[in-house]
Length: 312
Image (tube, rainbow, N blue to C red):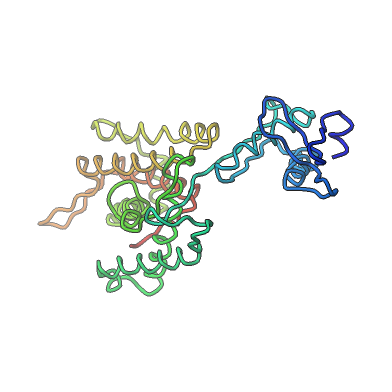
């Protein structure tokens, strides 16, 4: 408060000490008429602390979009008083939309749907789906529990990420747990299928590491080239996300990668077993393409907070 007063930025508005930053329509109340402090004061103090004590180069505020006007005033006040130069230090508000439960209930609104209730319902629905497919008959107790939690928590996280964060997010279990389309459930299933290809040929990690050094990757088939080109786009996608913070671009990329891998797998034989002699023929170049795909998928999952599975 004293710093803003000393630089002549404070006005008295009905007894309150306020600051109207440049290019803003909304002022900030930094001291009430009875000498108290406000959220505006706290946010300014926090911004100053992050800039000068923590010496932050990048500050990202992930707060609902209704607060965009407040953060616009907050950031402009920080620039006006000389705390930071936006060309040097990045300070940004990521304003996310509302979370709707089947289009009705807002999480955190007056019509409250507790997060713990949402997670419990996700666990129940994912287990019901696994049992409907009789996965409880083939998975161990530990594997079943791991699959349940990965699918349950993953579907909620992914649904929050896969659309433009400015927009409202509808959490519908019927859609989120669908193993077709752009869902985490679909991606988790596809990841397991990718991992099974090398496993079906009894290729261990040591053999794969040696092959990665010694094997020339063949891209003669158009589906091989299409998959390889998409894999190579991964760093570009990450760079764009760093620039605009739009995580849905990563979701779109992973979905494209999974569907492109399916095209590759349907048209390019990786492991072939002779039905008469049981001899197994392995196309190591294609196996390595599979491994590169799973490595990119795994890194994408890590960035989104999804837990990949070995069995599902």
